[in-house]
Structure formats: structure tokens, C-alpha cells
Image 1 (tube, rainbow, N blue to C red):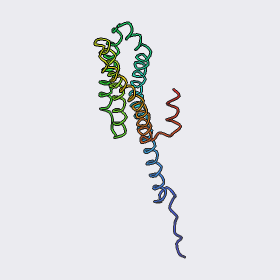
Image 2 (cartoon, rainbow, N blue to C red; image 1 turned 30 degrees about the vertical axis):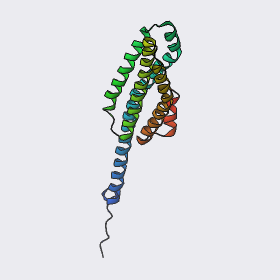
Image 3 (cartoon, one colour; image 1 turned 180 degrees about the horizontal axis):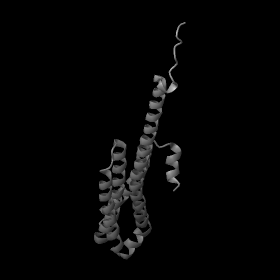
Image 4 (spheres, rainbow, N blue to C red; image 1 turned 180 degrees about the vertical axis):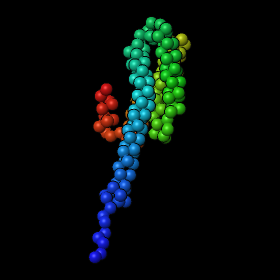
Length: 177
């Protein structure tokens, strides 16, 4: 009689270990993507907090600018200008963590926003000090540029988050916070 070929247990077959390896690599890949998304979220949060702070300064300047010009009270302007310079420096610190071109472009847009808003505050200050019309023109140019920068921030933020694996829904949810 011929001996019957003994079957190997399934856990000793090559295809079983291939399936296990694929599962493990898939799990590791998913964990790495989640870690990268979380890091991107932290980077975004740090930058976007600065955007919100610059927004507050810009709104304050828009609300109080004419009052400052009328009264000549420059105490607010100096504080706002210093604060905006600090925000620009903070963006430089944060941008050191930028690991992609998209992250760098996002940080550049935020820094540009802080610097442009600082120029607006300084043009108000200089106008009140000198009553030179060139500062009004400078202020107007910067205000016109402000909307372009705000759009650039939103576009670069979205592009950065998409590159980091965020879905449209996740990005949209950020704007509702």
C-alpha cells in the first residue's frame, strides 16, 4: 500500500503566513497614517490659533482704527503692533516643524497675514503721528492685500491637510469649530 500524503496543518502553509504578514503590515500602515494625521492636526492647530489671534487684532484695528485716528490715542496701536510681531516670530518657530512643502506654504501664508496686519497697524500709527497721506495709501494697499492672504491661508491649509490624509469632511469640520 502506498502511504497517503499527510496534509500539513494550515498554520504551516506559506499562504497562511503571507496573510498574517499582510494583516500586520496593513495594521502598521494604518497606525502610521493615524499618527501622521494627528501630528498634522497638532501643527494645523498651532498655526490656525495664530490666524485666529491675528484675525482678532485685524478686527480690532478695523473697529477702532477710525477712533484712534480721531482721538490720537496711540496706546492701543503700539500693543497690537508688538503682538503681531510676536505672532510672526511664533510662526517661524512653528514652521521649523513643517515637514512638507505644503506645510511650509501654509506657514508662510500665516506669517504673511501677521506681517501685513502689523503693517496696517503701523500705518495707522504713522499717519496719526505725521498726518502724511502716504500712510493712508499704504494702509489701503495692505487692506486690499489682506483678503488675498486670507484666501491663500485657507487654500494652503486645505492642501496641507489633504496631503496629510485628511478627508474633505474632516477639513470641513475644522471650520465649524
